[in-house]
Length: 415
Image (tube, rainbow, N blue to C red):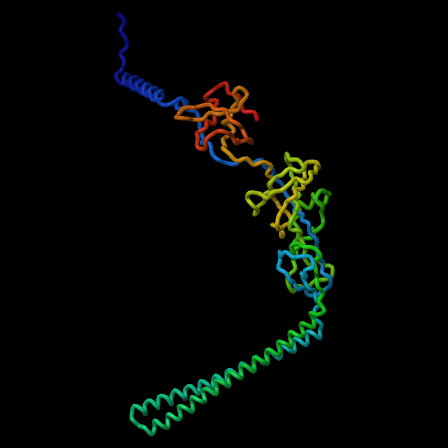
C-alpha cells in the first residue's frame, strides 16, 4: 500500500477560505452588472459645455482715425473730455500764445495787490475780534454785578449797573456791525481785483486759435504716431514689424505747452475698426467669414468680427479683421500681445474623444445604464484632439472612456 501525504490542517483551511472568497466574488459580480465585471473599465460623466476652434496670434489695432495738429504754438486749453463724442463743427480745443512779459507783469501786480489786501483784512479781523472779546468780558462782568446787586436789594446800585449793561450791549452791537461792514468792504475790494485779473486773462485769450473738427467721432488726447499709418487690406513690411513693436504713447493735458504742427489729439470713427493679427499657424478661415476676437481685458464672449483679407508670407499668415463697435473699446491701446480668434463655437453635451468608437461606419459610445454598459450611436457635432460634442446623451450620464475594454473589435473614431 502506498501512503498518501497528509495535508496540514492550516493549508486545508487556506484552500477552503480562498475558494469560498472566490465563490462569493463570482456570486456578487453575477448579481450586479456586466460593467462591474470588468475591473479596468473607466467612466466619466457627460457634461454640458462648449467646444471651440481657436487660433492665437498677436494683433495691431487700426482705427479709422486722424491725428489733428496744433494750429499754433502756445498753451492748449482742452474744451472736451477725453473719449467724448463730438459733432462736426464742434470746438475741441484752443491754443493761445504763451503769456507775454506785459501780461505776466500785469498779473503779478494784481496778485501782489490781492495778497496785500488779504494781509490787511486778516489784521483788521484780528483787531476787531480782540475788541469784541474785550467788550464781551466787560459786559459779562457788569451783568454779574447787576445780578449781585439785585440779590442784595441794592436798588440804587442795580439801577446804575443796569444802565452800564445797556450801554455795553449797544457797544457790542456796534462792534459786530462794524466788523460785518469791514468784511464786506474787503470782500468787495478783493472781487474787484479778481475782476481785473479776469479781464487781463480775457484779453490774452482773445488771441487764442480755436481747433474745430470737420467730422463726428470720439476725441482722444493720447496718440502713438500710428494714426493713419496703415490701411485695412494692405500688408506692407512695415505693418508686420509694427505688430511686434511696443508703441510709445504720448498725451496732451489741459494747459500743456504745444508747438505748431505737433499732434494735439486724434479723432476716431466709433463705428468700424480693424485688427491685423499675425499667426504662426495658418487659421482655417475664409474671406468674409464671421468670427469672434478675444484679448485680455476684453469681452470674455469675444467681439464679433469678419475676415476682411488674408495675407501670406514665409512662416506667417496675417489677417485683417473688421470689427464693428459702437465706441472704441481700446482707444488707449494699439498692440494686443495675445489675440484669440474663435472660428467655431458649439454648445452641447461634451464627452472625452477617447469615448468614441466606430461601429458599422458610424460613431458611437458606451453609456452606463442601471449598472450595465449600453452602446449608443451618436451624432458628433464638433470634435478636437481631446473632446467632442455629441447628441443625444443626457447630461450626467456615465460614459465609458476606454471602450476597447468592452469590445475588442471597436474601430477608432474617425471624424
